[in-house]
Image (cartoon, rainbow, N blue to C red; front, side, top):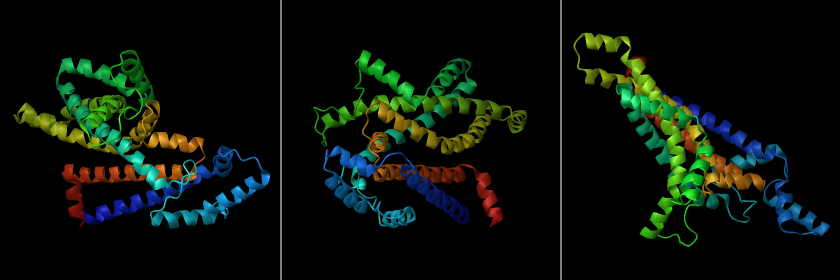
Length: 330
């Protein structure tokens, strides 16, 4: 088992290096110059002052050396935990900016992923053995899973936020509320969290419910289910085995869908002006902020890779066949 996880870690390590390299390359191939954009915001018109500022900031941000050296310097700084200084919010460190945004994204993503997966699988399993639920869950599930996260977010913000006025449609908390460890702030934070959470939860829920419903039906029609029924096994036992076997593709699907859900969360944050990584990435793109963009994507890459590794561990724990194969290989 340790060899298995060692191989997995090696694959994830190579994936991390490749993804971070692409992440480093993308901003540098974008049109525009971050230094000129930064100087333009300062409204300096004197040519000599502009030239002096360009030289100073290019050296400060390490953009005055060849690209290959910038790449090596990037890895050197990254290994020391230094993500650089933001161009957009100069002179604030990128790490400090990200630490203010990551809790909002994590607080939105983790509950949406976990709860939609659990609820979707439960409802899908119930739908496979209940005609009434099947006739309800199936069309609703197809409708939800066909909706883009951003589009559903716009509908929820318009319907429940603007028209009905039930829930706030923008921000993470009210401007009149000061962030603090109080029940008032916690309630306000929760009310602003509900609509972004629902837009992620509902779309993912529909996909998991349909997937589990189809897998349960497939497993109940498999040979081992017919054999168990022929032996007189209780129907609940047959369904138990069918559910456990149907869970395996759902765990794999969770690993494959993590990237899509994360991307949907970033767009959802933009729709609701939620102060997470999605809004930071948008601002970094608008301001040609290489370092903030790199840092935000670095957090996302790490998060997705760690989540996939956890899913791999869960797969080994859930599926005894993999453990048997490992023992046989050992």
